[in-house]
Amino acid sequence: MLRRTLLFVVIVGLVDAASPVVRADEPPVALDAVLALPLSVGSVALLTAYDEAPGIRPRLLDALKDAQPDLRAAAARVLLVRGDVGALTELAAAADVEADVVAAAEQNRALLSLGGASHDAAVVERTLRLGPYPATVVVETFARLRPASLVTHLPQLIDRGPVSEALAHVIERVEAKARPQILQMALAAKDAVLVDAVLTQSREDEAPLDPSAVEPALRHADAAIRRAALWHILMADVDRERTSMFGPAVARLRESMPVHVAQAGADADAAFERFLVDLWDRRQGQSTAAGHWPSTIKAFKRRRMPHDWTFGALAAVCVCPIRNSPR
Image (tube, rainbow, N blue to C red; front, side, top):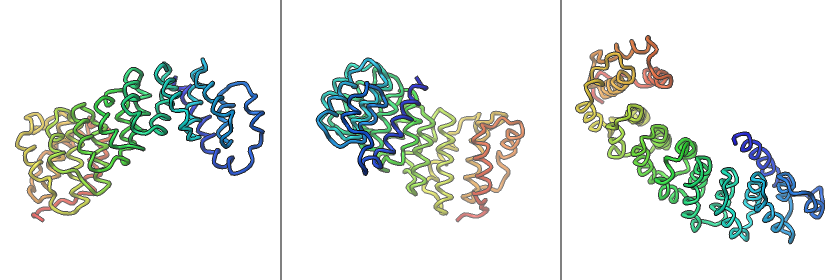
């Protein structure tokens, strides 16, 4: 399936990229000659080069009903590229019975893009019976076109395979006021990837989330989520170069921190979590003692630290000035 998907994306993607150039000039082949070709992904993709003509839509609708799933997928993409809203009824009918995940993803993308929010609920319902790939396409399309629809339908889609990773790549398209809701969904789904993406994007937009939104992440059972929240708090403080609004939240975390984290010991995850809290204390001028840094360094030496957090810790030492007096 991956090979088919990549091949299809390459073929149609090249046509998408070339179509504005081709349309600027006279197409090199007469439309009648293209319509006379046997149905194939290539002959369907060529139709992006022509202005509206009576024979184009019937040709694409024939391809949409073809037995070959690649051809059905190509027809849906070309209808989208051409902006053919007149084919929405046929696209919806094809999507209702589609069993191929690549073709279904293309049909749903076209419906969401051409048909507007009126198709959202039906597309999500169809997606739930298919696999993770169509769900990923739906999430990306929502994020690109209608972030409000993404917030509405994400609870149904968030556990569909690699949806969170796809959303993490497009989270910048989601308006800031919707991110606390997405963060809550990610926490409920125990999705550390999406939690980290939401926190990171909020910080990069110079709009760190309110402590009330982040504190549940600090108390989460998943260590990766707690570390992501602590890192967000530290970097938000560094970026703003002022006493952070997150101080009370970190204080509550310190008071309720599990014994195994407070002791740090030989557990690399616990050692790094304690290290982040120690680093916070130093930035606030609240501690000059060695704290739990020795156990953290020991974990580094034993190579027990998660690879990505090892570099994060070293970066923190470089970018976070240690303050010995309150700011």
